[in-house]
Structure formats: structure tokens, C-alpha cells
Length: 286
Image (cartoon, rainbow, N blue to C red; front, side, top):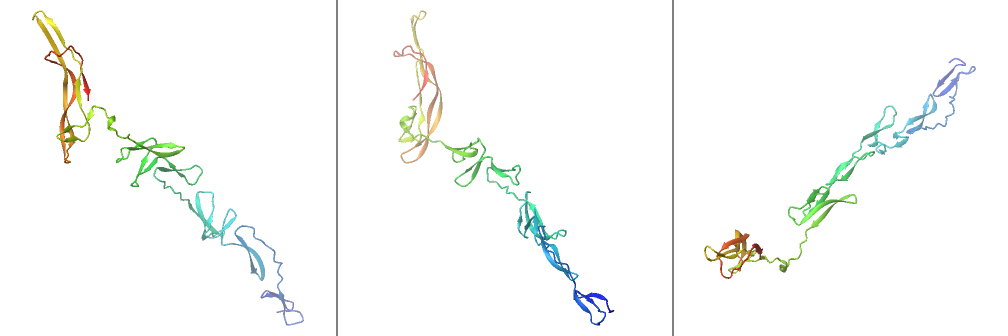
């Protein structure tokens, strides 16, 4: 080195003095390290040495940044859209930050029987809305009944269910047919039990009879020179044969046929001394 020559080596500034062969070296002078802060979300100040001097730079953190808020990888990221977002492990090559990954929000569209899924304006997911009534039977089977509809179970003819709207709710209302207590004394007289040879009908049957007044007359015939009598009697005009089940003392059952009067009318017959002038006829039930 020539006297007076300067150079840098190992972060030192060296000089060859004019009157000596031994170089004089001193540390390089660096500017004062500034108190630098990184104001942007997702950045952190990092001190590094450049050209033997320390320097402060802002480096990205291993986080996601959304709406100026930091999120750790794996954390959920709230969003105003109908999406489900989270901070992923993927690094964005431009920002050097972790990227936010989003998928469409999954809505539960499975509704219980009797309800239907409907969209709600302004909402990401809709809701289940009641459309009909649901009746749960003893065997855990369900029956859907539309509003206003009446449904009778196949094996329960005395029960009915009606779907009614009560205070904005669809409710199945059960209606049962209640029979008055049976009292034989309240039966009409034309119903009776038939008995024959100790056997008795299992249920009462209707027995009809003909009764009423019919036209009769007596008048003198000039030509015959005698009294002419005309008589008519209230009689059955049409009948039918009906059957009834009979039960006998030994427990056996048999069918018995009996005659049922369908219509009555006045019919001409021979007059007797006891017959008087009568008219009209009707069928009477006994």
C-alpha cells in the first residue's frame, strides 16, 4: 500500500500513514439506527446488517390480514359474504402473507316432516316453514295432513284428525266419536229380538205390520133386489225375505229367514158381519 492510501476491510476503514508502514484501521462509521416502526397490519420490524451497517426493514408476519385484522393460520376469518373463511397455510407470493381461503356457506336444508325449506331475503341461509300438520300414530308412523283436511286412520273409524291453524301454528286437532251409553229401554218398539226353538237373534230386527182403515160399503141393488156389500182389508202388498243370525243355548249359530213387509195397501176381500165401513191403509212398525 502506498502512504496515504485508504481502503475498507472487515467492516473497518484503513489508511496507510505517511510515516509508518503499519496501517491504521477504525470501524466504519454508520448512521444512527432509526427508531423505525411498521404500521401496516401483518408487518414486523426486522434489523439486518447491510454493508457492515445495521438497517431496519419491515417484513411480513406469518399471518393472514383481513380488514386490517391479523389472524393466525387455521383460525376462522369472519366475512360479510355467505362464505366460510379461514387463514390458510398458503403464502401469497405478492404480499408474502398467508392467504385467506373461503368456501360457500353450507346451509342445513333438511326440514322435519310437514315443513319446507324457504329462502330468507337478505340472509345467507333460509329456514324451515311449516306447511302441514303431522300426526304421530302409536306405531311411530307419521301422517301428513294438509291445512283444512280431515283424515281418519284406517283402523280407527271413530277417530278423526283435522289440520287447523291456531295462532300462526298448524296443529292437528283430534276428534273422537263418543257414543251414549246403551239403554235397551230407549230402543224404538219396532226393533225386537227374534226367538225360535230357544235360539235368539244376535241383534234386534225390525218387524213391520199393516194396520189402517180401508173403504167398505153396503148398498141396495134395485136390479138384484138385495143388499150388496163391498169390503177391502189392509194387507201387505209386497214383502221380502231377510236373514238374521241366531245363537242357540249350546253356543252354536245359525241363520234364520223371516218375512219383512215392504208396502201395505187396501185389498178387496169377502165381507163379514163384523166389518164396518172403513177407508185408508198404512204400514205400521212394531
